[in-house]
Image (cartoon, rainbow, N blue to C red; front, side, top):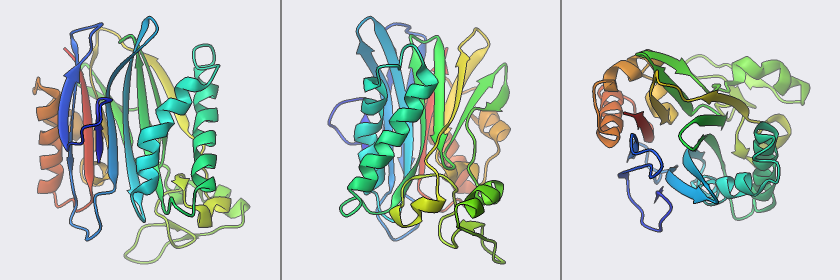
Length: 272
């Protein structure tokens, strides 16, 4: 279920480090939830050399109604992003185009790729510049001087109700349940989900920032953590753990101790 770095081996945990800047390390861990279906999360975590630039590529894809779309994203989304001719000169728009292109590919293959997936992606350029994009409710959080800051946007149906209704859809809000697009999906943006696509967006929110001396680490995690752990609680839980894989494991263990039942994936990138 995981692309550990960029090899062919599958694993539910792993770690590595940058070759350009040895002070940057990363680690990931995954745990299947209590549902009866197979694990639906996929992860990319590793560094790739492209010409004279080192790219840290990190992503969590949280599938729903099957894992096929998340698997497709794992294998194709970064490839499409880096193929965009404007990636180096107009990075934000290049990522938007790549997200749309990838969603179009998934929809064209909807007969074989059932369901959908959320995504949060982070590209670290030469250890100095970070570009985060997301659709759905997996989240990226950065820690600077011990303070947590959310870099992604949780795309909740209640927050995008007007947009969904303008497309002819509706948001249900039944007692004891979370708001859902057309009474089905608990996120307002996702890849795939062809039956809901008229009312559902795959447009990413994007943030870009420079990595400075105050940057301590980045967390990428699926909503199985964020349903039960706040941004600052997550930062506080791992700020004194030097090894990033150990930190990812610890954060997942904390979520499980708070009765999280979902599939959980977590990546931690440390700037030592």
